[in-house]
Amino acid sequence: LSSSLSSSSRHKSYGAAKWKISKSNERQTRRGRNKARYAPLTTRAEQREGNNSPYHTQNEEKLMDLLTVQSVKTVLHYLQETNGEMHLFLNNYIAENPFFQTRKNAAGQPKRESGEEWLIKLASSGLTTVTDVNRGSVPTIDDSQPKTREVSPRDCAERILATRKDLGEDFVSFLEKVEVKNGSVLRNALERTFTIVEEEE
Image 1 (cartoon, rainbow, N blue to C red):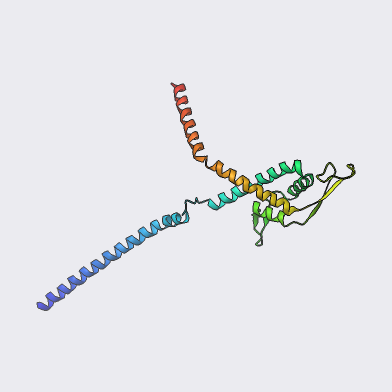
Image 2: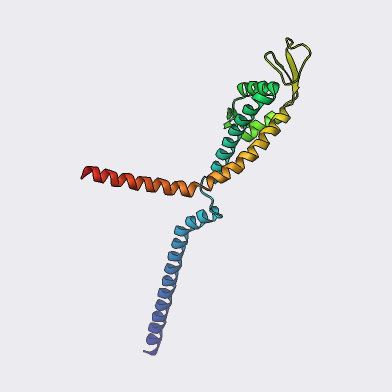
């Protein structure tokens, strides 16, 4: 009888231990599921550290491309009045090398050329002789002779980079007004909503 009782108690203790282990495993499994469920959220939060948006890199590229194009336009505007040969060269260069062309990379995949790459290509070009039959920035004895001058593409690129720096400072001041613009949009939308309601009544 005593042996049967001890055997029964052993079975009970074994069963209780087994139940505790199964419960413990269940809790660990549940924790594992919770970790798996919330892990992607933590990862995304870490990736956006510093308030970076999911399109941070793309936004930066778009902004720099816009700055580059606007800088080239600005430089062309001033060169039209100050340096006829360089103005003609830059106009011709843009016609032959448009912005943001799609080219194949080393792997044979199509890749859009960025504004940075366009500027690097311009700055690394050699000296170019430009002849402006209309006018030139270098006076000559005989004004009827074509105006010929060597133009440095690197000098042209440096002008664009200096202008891009100045425009970048302007862009910063524009971006500081985003919050004001957002408030204006919401205010105008609210006013329009009240106007529509009054007209319906």
